[in-house]
Amino acid sequence: MSTPLVSILIPAYQVASYIGETLESVFSQQFPGAFEVILVNDGSPDSAELEKAIAPYRDRIVYHVQPNGGPSVARNTAFRLSRAPYIALLDGDDAYLPDYLQVQTEQLADNPAVALVYGDMEVFGGSPVDGRRLSDLNKETEAPSLVSLLHATATVINTPMIRREAIIHAGGWDETSFHCEDYDLWLRIALQGKLKRHPRVVARYRLRGGSLSGSTSKMCEGRMKAYHKLLDNSACPRALVPLVQERITITQGDIALARGKEAFRDQDFQLAATHLDNASKYKKKIKLSLVAILLRLVPKLLYSLARLRARVFTRYPDA
Image 1 (cartoon, rainbow, N blue to C red):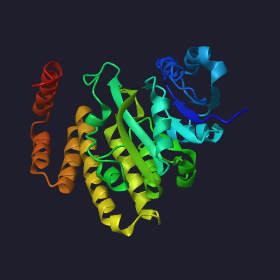
Image 2 (cartoon, rainbow, N blue to C red; image 1 turned 180 degrees about the vertical axis):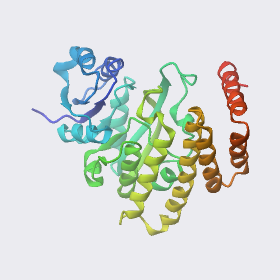
Image 3 (spheres, rainbow, N blue to C red; image 1 turned 135 degrees about the horizontal axis):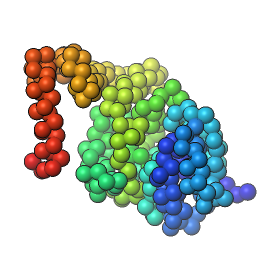
């Protein structure tokens, strides 16, 4: 059996409703080269529906079922089953555009010093930002590097293509991480090699509330873990230590603010006030302290005003 040029890794967990569209986008590629598709069912509770949805493609994919271990475990499993020198990532609810494989492989072939390459994605799925570029929503303004990844002025978008040896050298995905596990890997790859972004839109990103990235506080906690790991990494340049420490402080404030908002949505106003007080210490914003005071004095009024504001902005998004 000949070795394919590209292995496409697809972790699947509660994506039965979308996986058919995802796989169709893969097998509609305008690409003359050989590729393989490895789909890992990570103990998904919708396995019966998932297997029904992938039935038309079963003879063209490597399908593996395992107990639920989280996204890092699923990606590592798919990686171990893969054979190609180029590794392409695709979430089970996203989709490639027809020229994804052609564009990405050309980018890596033309740039031998590049370890990871990515283009842009278009948002879809019925959200208010459908049709927007993900790079615009992420406020991506700089070329990817270790420094710009730390500043969040560059964010590796969901469907990169990576050289196999770069993943091996970086140690793969951290199986103890359930949020920002990709970000953690990008930081480790950026320590050893060059990352490249190009402006072509090559995929579609489904924005939905039930995804693993839905909890802001959990995502912030995942970033925090990645920063601490970077500080402990002997390959991290000492000159970057102050920047990493600064990002840790900023993220502590982000976590407190996110937890405050989540408690507010749950109408646990005292807990929300406590978190906002904590956030104000890190972010040094008087406004947060004032909101915390109001939450203790007139929580129901503040909640009613917030709901009214949300309705206005939903109905009139340009207000």
